Length: 310
Image 1: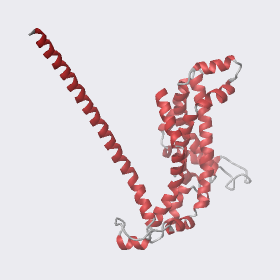
Image 2 (image 1 turned 90 degrees about the vertical axis):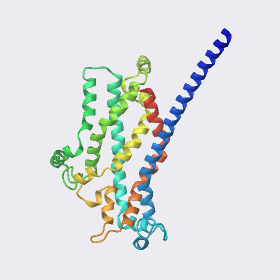
Image 3 (image 1 turned 60 degrees about the horizontal axis):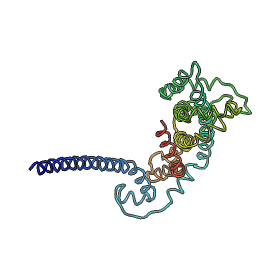
Image 4 (image 1 turned 45 degrees about the vertical axis):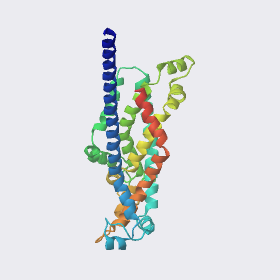
């Protein structure tokens, strides 16, 4: 009788534990399903405008006028892309964007990595204060400093063989300087956190072997920071390439504007061909999409590695 009661008690406990475990598994599974549903819905919402622009760009304006923008039917062609490329002057604007983006990204990562190395590997009086000052610069919207920066660039005198305006205005270098200044804070913050996770013993061992500060920076820290640099480089290319504000403020000549302004050339005075505008928008977004897809593995690895170390 006692043995039977003990057996019954044990069976009840086992059943309770199994039931509790099953309930927890179901709840956890429900959470995973809800997460996947949410992410799928958000991905679709992000992709719908891009896919719709691609669909519209492939349709002739005659079919759109006949069937409407939200109808499916008619013919497809690449004529809108040819017209947008020729009418919008995309080759010139694209070269301007390249001349702005590449120097800006390289200068930003170089200066930010040096600053991050200083605040993460050395302890001195104004270490934290300087890092906060760099990061605080990102709290100011660019619109607040647009007028003062415009006046400063207008007062900087340059020889006419270097600048046809005699100042720093209306020069691609002005956009490079402005973007570099505004992006250094964010990159310094990210790289400093990443470098703090690198063991101090590495730089101490290099110092014992006679390596100076520059040798520690170039040969020890920078090779270990490549994943973070790849992730930041991808983000910065997208940020700078898509920037519309600073070129519009600092450049007056139309032939020096970046590719993000080329869509304005596709708008008619009395009538706008939205199929043509969609083709131009797709042309503009293609370089950043290709860069992201090409560096997707390095981008995700950099973010994941930084998160696991932090």
